[in-house]
Image (tube, rainbow, N blue to C red; front, side, top):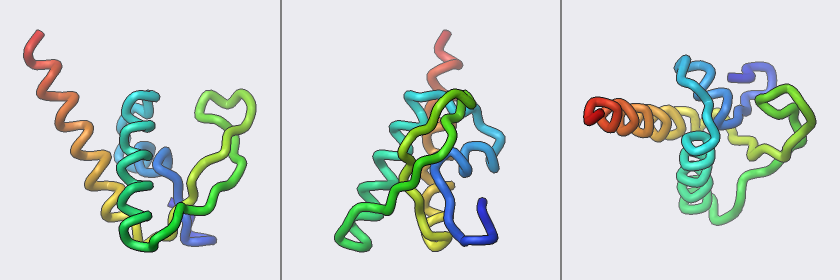
Amino acid sequence: MNNSTATFTIIDVFKHLKFEAVKPYTWSAGLQLVKHYQAETGGLPPKELRTKTSGVGVHCFAIYPIEFWDEAEKIVKGLKAEKARQMEMF
């Protein structure tokens, strides 16, 4: 979480929770958080160019105010739980 500006990206949440930030999960979590943000604010979250997770190039990331952190954590944890259940089947 970026305390200096009180904003974060969905990738920050994955890193904070020590979950692997793989595209299918980050994109799914990001889409869910965008929908939540839209429902709460009536608009899209601001975006900012940041270095890609791979470290190569830049990407436009949605930036959220800290007030959305708890919802973001809930979304990411939900994806992680789903992934864990699916792995048990194999």
